[in-house]
Image (cartoon, rainbow, N blue to C red; front, side, top):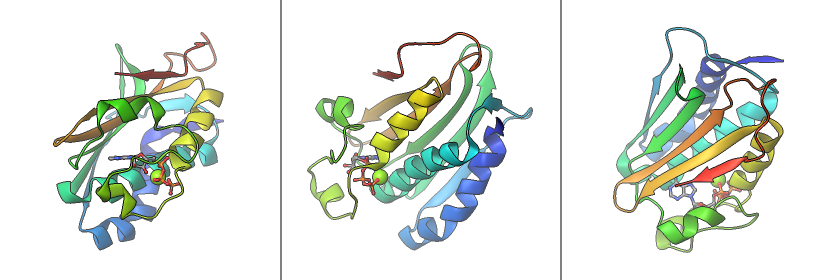
Length: 165
Ligand code: ATP
Ligand code: MG
């Protein structure tokens, strides 16, 4: 079906607000003026945004805030970025984040409960949507996880489901 990304992300933010405030994290949401709509499964995309926003709050807790941007620009197409200002992720771990059960073995994440499946599920769902996950992270500064939907989900099919830099 047609999924309004702004509405969907706003809904996820509402459901995660109690968890965020327990962690002392404020979630900032920036929505586009015009709706960013993609073709997809709303329940699956809710799962994707929940996993990313939960991670940003949990692992980026020290940054105190999480910034989410929903946009649809000519250059980038429809995309959602979840940014935190936490410890970041060392470069060597980034390509492995979407592996099942992979967890970065640092004190900050060992202390947090998790199975290491969240990003594997994200990868799986995004592949079905012909969307990509772009991860940018700087140790000591934070991380940004961007979900990029193709210029046309029903049109051109990309064989590349993931891109890391
Ligand atoms: P689950 O999501 O199944 O509860 P999890 O959060 O450990 O468990 P993933 O969501 O797949 O699993 O994340 C894998 C690992 O990537 C995490 O354990 C953490 O080490 C690291 N990670 C994910 N997001 C961030 C982030 N925003 N900042 C720092 N590290 C992160
Ligand atoms: Mg997780």
